[in-house]
Image (cartoon, rainbow, N blue to C red; front, side, top):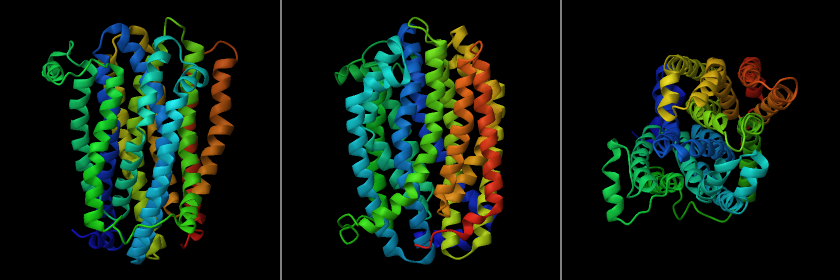
Length: 479
């Protein structure tokens, strides 16, 4: 199917079925993104007990820190997608190509800046900002240097797949991400275990690692496997984008265009700030737990959060997948001057994601304990993790509603509105209450979990009211 016919279906096809066919692969694709982390967590959990627990705690913190850079890059990607989708909806392919190239220049610069920051400040971030202790801090610093230094791989991967989605292609990126996960698993087995002992299911790994003279890198091997797998996947995706959509060819390339860069930045920074606020809020929870409920010899609470935050990231990324579908449909239909269809797209995508979140919540409530024990059998880790899931997991339904409606508003260019909503909810509600839960009276993990759940519900309510008013549609940008 041509890119033109795909875009035509978005603005003229039956809305419910067209959105479902478009959104399901995106949600699955975003879920696949999180499996990089789940694969790493599984492999690391099978290391020796004295290293497995601290390693799980370390990657739980590091992944959230790395997510800050990815979210900023994703803001550039969503801004690019909003502009490309609207230009595509108007039939202006050359303008869409020009925006796509200028956005790649911006991602390149951000990759360089974030990579240098990670290489130089990993120890300060882990120990001084987050407050990690003992082996968690030591292992996390090494892991963070690699994962941030190679962050260009995820930045460009997000950018290329988001541009493909904005132009009406959602299945190819999913297929490539699936291949990337297989490659990540193979590389992680080889680099985490090396020629040493490995679980029986991965007994094929050590002989290969020995033949290739690969060392047993443990947690650090997981970081290198992720970077390599993402980079290898990026190459064919770039080729497909160039071949199918004619992007990034000689005629479409050029020096930085200040007008376009400024336009992308104007849309991107509120969107990036909005999602960075969400990640920083999670980091604050992690920091409060590390400082209040752990010691130099007992980091089990941090390990528990490292596990449950991976499960929460699955909910977040599935929501971002449906949000991306909403953003594309809203953007292209506004570009085609179909305001009512644009608004309906947001509500319908939100409904689909609420259904997906409800299923995920049921799975976590039913199988939460075996899932946590799959990664760590320690009684204290299991208790903390299940306490979090029992309180917070039901609020993922609200989290999903808010994410999709916010993304739909972003597709209309209302990124400042979404930023202000998250800024108000997190800074005026979640952070003060989270600090109070650990600073006043007897510090309580349960009170902290209740704050997280209440924040998800409040955010969903505010987004639903704002979206229902619909004023952002009248102010949609006309670039």
